[in-house]
Image (tube, each protein chain N blue to C red):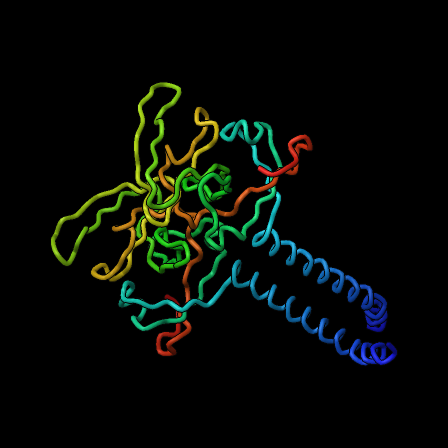
Length: 166
Length: 166
């Protein structure tokens, strides 16, 4: 029994130190997470749908979340949205039109000249990739509710020769 | 000059104390916010669209966010979703069908018996209020992307005679 007490007495300050360091790390991660989710976060985007604006093999862009909260995200801006087809996936596209505007788009640009006109309903936006020949966007899955927009991509960080605003 | 130094020397510990207390409060609010957004939060819901499950004049329910993150939100759950019509508003309805299922619903139950059948597309859910005579839901704005679901309401806290699981 006394050997157990001795053992506990020996380890107690080390365990206390361990806990306080863990709390410090937890508080830092909490702060990092809140900043990432609500202020600004780097995101790796890849794929051919936003050529030539974004590279095929992957760019790191900074995405800020404040514009989206204040409703200041509009046409011509590159946004990161949660995919309406797969909620675990995020897609990066450009906003072409907002609610109330009318969009005319080519349904299948590689195959025909057929175009279609749609009015964007209230509370929705119309997103399209810059590379319309190889992009799955609102032309396939329809207008996207504004609530799915996660943030606006405004600055490219990697690769270094593309460093600068989008 | 020396009076100025005296003044600063007098106030410096008080300002330091003020800053450290503010940081403590900021850390607590940070933790509270993370818990509210990602674990569980109380929400005041009101309106006639979920009678008799939820009252007209307002109930406080606990909404947990973990089920939604793990994709465990399904039919017959009451969920809080961001409105597809107005991104600043949240609505509380019941999930009637998930992706791939076919929904048959009364288009205007107060006026006629006409019903309509829709297949819920991939990545979407169909939500309806329990009080279909007075509810604006998927019958009006269509299937809702899963990404707009904020959380699942599982426990009513107020009024006290309704205390218990939903």
